[in-house]
Length: 272
Image (cartoon, rainbow, N blue to C red; front, side, top):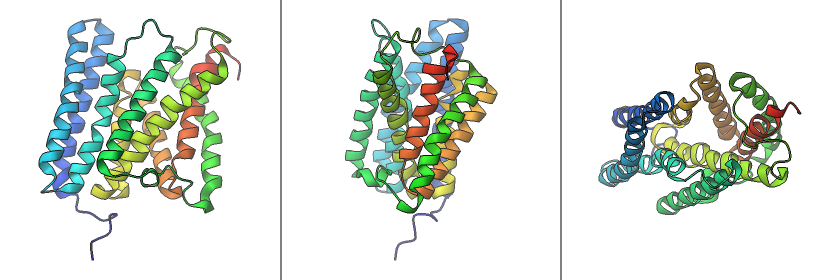
């Protein structure tokens, strides 16, 4: 009988995973320095590092398949993290509004996630897209409602630039749908769905949740706020723990979207 997926050996993959996480951090820091200094060379370097990861991760995964198929599977899924950044950097901002730009990114990310799922034989229920444990549906509903509070706290920490220019500048309902698809569904599918599922097979649930949440937080280094990064990390842990308990990511996806709607569409204009 094979050992359960929740108790794999952590020895061999740890060094590899730390190395790739370090490179992802380096790429994000280069992009932050580019924004702070307005030196294009930093932005080009960050883009090239992320692009290199998109190329190298599948190559390393293919090399690892005969020796460590679980590590190969996770590395093949991990490509989605730098790919998120490459797509966002490569997609032109003009002539689109922020909401239109997010819609383009959301479609690109969902298509990329679908490609990874197909390549790895992952079904929707494998990445927690089902209802999950019906005994805990109320927990997912509660998490979705909690998104309002999470959005308020995040806004107080960051006071970010809104994604619309003024109330009514874009139809609210389509904007909310775009935010749900591009940030709630797409990001949760990548991190709490595909990455966490393949990570559990490799590391077990606790270590996988920690590593995936670290990757999720690292991609928010651009917030340039230690408190904001801690908030993102803790929120990622909360979403992951609820998902592991309920076996459904819909609560996290809705909470993520509700929080972003509050932070970027409503609270900047003082009406909530």
